[in-house]
Length: 477
Ligand code: NBP
Image (cartoon, rainbow, N blue to C red; front, side, top):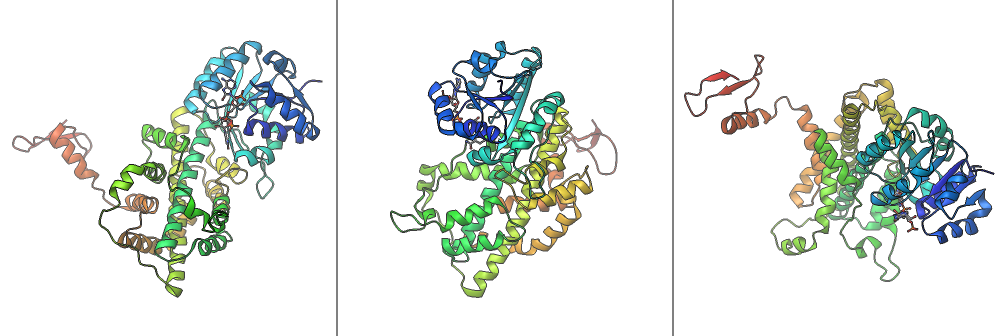
């Protein structure tokens, strides 16, 4: 017997992905650098389906039917290159290597190019949903060649999450690094979503005066409306959890320094390179970074500022409603920025990414899955070349309805000294886009003054320079 697919790298993600393939009826060859992991998988889960445990790379490759489909689920970076170098010489033209790790899309582009020379399809694939997703159905974002997707697509559709309407949460995102790029932006949006939720929580706690348990209930209510999403759902779970050792709310016994693995940072770095303003995602990355600066925070604890004074009763409840509006409006802006980055990446690298299809495959399996993504898909269905999500009529109307509350929440946060960088960045982005004139005109004047960088005029074509050091006459540049 030969295996239709092989998985090498059997830590949490690879093991669960292999089980997912097997549970869906595929014969799966499994391999890991440390052989004991392979043995453990076959022993523990062998009854779930057909596994072929391979101890060596040669055995593993020999177990695969041709053209071979080989999934790599190892640590991103050096280990991925090491595994590719180990297996590539054993493969033949037409074989496929699927990298399901969190690779940087630039690495994926390089690997794809190198392996293409050997006739091997390299399919950089974003996989979201963590351990549980890998086992029960992740959201899958494959890049690589169209030919490889013809072979892999049906299998990926089978193991993927299904959206509420039954559609599999996988699509061929685009060539080479497109899948990993989209996965990267997915994670950036995830950072922004989490930051906005965090700010909503802090406002409900400090300004509205609610306890974590009460805030959990508020999030549960929100989860029945337009904010319905996995992240809001788990937020309620975390907030209602009580620490067994102390009897305190769990959220009060956790050190308030957030960690990161890097995909949010990449999203911002690449956005800077592409010239895309992803201010909300950037604030989310910076907020995690700031939280981790323990010494800086300790040294700044004595700085002057207001202490929040909590509301009560109907006032607190009304404020909570406003926070929901602010959160929703800010979320629209985050997704607007994230999809702008995907569109810019697609343009830069010639990927021709279908933004509506991307929003559709995020509806299930992944961390940012949400009812909201149906709305985004509808917006792109209505108009595939939508310049920005904010130009969609429905979203524009929703923001119009939310904005008074959004502004009031930021006024309260500012007055009471509660940091809300995500909400504030989102509103500033919105106001900047709708502004008739921006101070960028002044910036251009300054640049022309100190560096003769020239400027364009509103009333005439061409580039101009003012002789600032002389008689201030204007010359054509
Ligand atoms: P890890 O990222 O912890 O990687 C452990 C695996 O890499 C083990 O199988 C290990 O083999 C193998 N490995 C390493 Br490390 N160096 C190797 C080398 N030089 N040669 C061969 N194998 C090597 O595993 P994970 O948490 O399951 O994640 C796998 C991938 O999936 C990562 O790229 C991760 O970023 C991505 N991802 C993770 C999640 C998540 O929720 N954890 C979600 C989505 C994507 P060994 O057993 O012999 O040490």
